[in-house]
Image 1 (cartoon, rainbow, N blue to C red):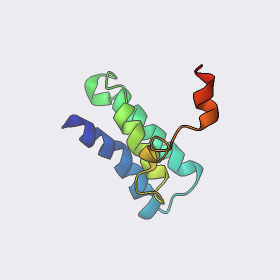
Image 2: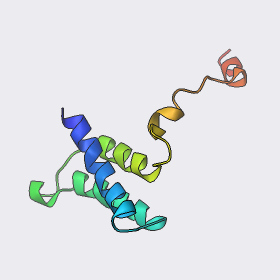
Image 3: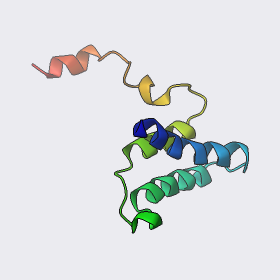
Length: 88
């Protein structure tokens, strides 16, 4: 249950900055980085927090709102035959 909540912890600040604060470009990246930093080095946990994997995934998903599943789009592509032939 913690994973989806941490994903939202990274997604929500970026979406709020985009649609409520009208932040664009590099400002959105800064908001996403700050969400990850806030999770990894929380003031309330004496600068000891989580690894930030789910939070950073949520922040990246918020940076690409035009795709409903931006994180899974590259994982669902088939492997090209050239890459498969490198395995031997």
